[in-house]
Length: 319
Image (cartoon, rainbow, N blue to C red; front, side, top):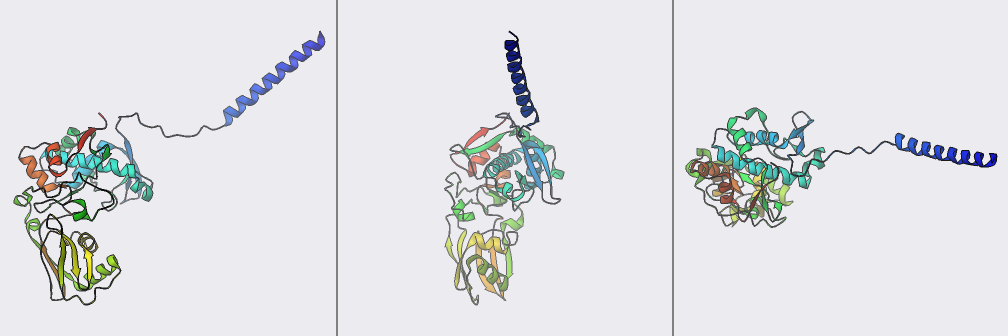
């Protein structure tokens, strides 16, 4: 009898010891820290790298977009033009976050650099901007269940370009970009977009050509447009002995200086490359001045986007 009692006590002791060990392991083992995922269909909070200061801040998507729209378009323009810009900015942000382009650079979703992401200036936010962003809250543009490349430019010179023509973009098909859309933007834009001229020293041009192509153009005594795209933009230029892409040359020489590739004249004069043209920007996607004109004609934000893009769908990602 005594032996049986001792056996039972031994078994009970072992059970209690095992339970204590299991509890201790579970107690002292630190659970993995996980960032809680927002509920499906809810407005995301994004991480934003402030390039000017090097700090990172977390910000709600719609609050962030107010700062983007304020920086990218004149805040006094019609609300529907600003709203079209908001839809494209939201789409651009979501598409780039999905691709992880800025995360590779700074470990964040977005940045305030126009070279890396898009413009951002919360100091310019006004009631017009707030109305535009709220009017389009959560709305993005899709093509076959994918975010579109939400391109836009300041002034397309009266006619829009395809992505291969205006940006030399051939990484993937972009059939949703409508080339050849005539918006009459030159009727309301500023004089420097209607007609401009720039003179660039030939040494700078030679350096740019070598950087792009790896070839020396030699003495630049003659220049010409060797290929034009459907909208009339210079896709390729003959600079001395070398052929160079128009969009690449524009970027290398400075997109603020060479305002577009919708050239009306090209020549060599007094040691300079002389270009004349119209428009400001690559001309792909939405033209901002054209958007303003369409808004003044009573077009909705969706109408404006459909003027520059085709076969696209609008989707509300969060309420």
